[in-house]
Image (cartoon, rainbow, N blue to C red; front, side, top):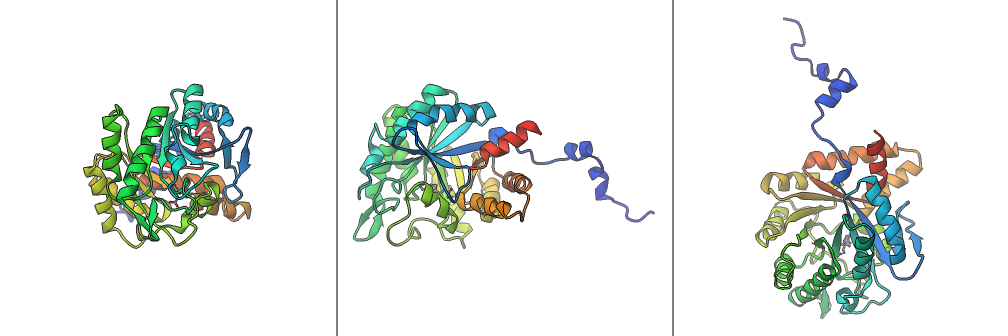
Length: 325
Ligand code: PBG
């Protein structure tokens, strides 16, 4: 008997063999591209910690949507930055607010582009927390009504998928009930089921102007040390009839993606967050890593861990690479 008997390298010898045995395929239609929508006209504010990403005014969205569609990216997720913020986040439920107007602009330009909307209070509140504050605490149940009304405003403007990111208990059920009673029983909910209190959201808070003005988000977002709790969080959202489950962030939480993949059959979404994006950009700018290769490796890792879809600021650049591969 020759040694070694089994040679794993046999199937790695040529590019064609490697393609044949590749287990994970990264595809452009896995991507959801985030957009930051601001008031004003002809605004395109680059976000310094997120090279290549900008806040954009509504009049710019039609061209942006066409570019995204032309790359083959099926969906965008919208974040709104209103001019007016107050303690109750009242702009969030305005049916003519920044997000409803952005949805209408995108759907008018590219009807087939799927518009997902982030539903949360933090972009609309002057204190920057994801819910209403009473006695310096984020209160759960009174926040649910406002989240439901925000989701309804998005639905009425033509959103295709509602994505609550606030981490209040019971919000999927509350939003589902509101949507169903208003004739939107066909609209899926993509729940940020497992969202950690992560330092990787730093650049996003610059982009969305949503950093909390006091305290932090640890009374509603999850402790990064917890794994079993992620299964409980996801189970609650499954029970409340969520249609997609998001795990956020992605890179440091691939085990959680895998856990959810094994436990639940719903489409699973990895959120490749702003700090992950910024770290790669910074390292690549220094010439310390190969940007494109590391990017594709990270995105492939998220799919291999179990994600069906990836929300990523890399969507456009990754699509360009995949389209020319
Ligand atoms: C909350 C929300 C946040 C992100 C998406 N939705 C910020 C937070 O919870 O503090 C972060 C996304 C990212 O970092 O890319 N509306």
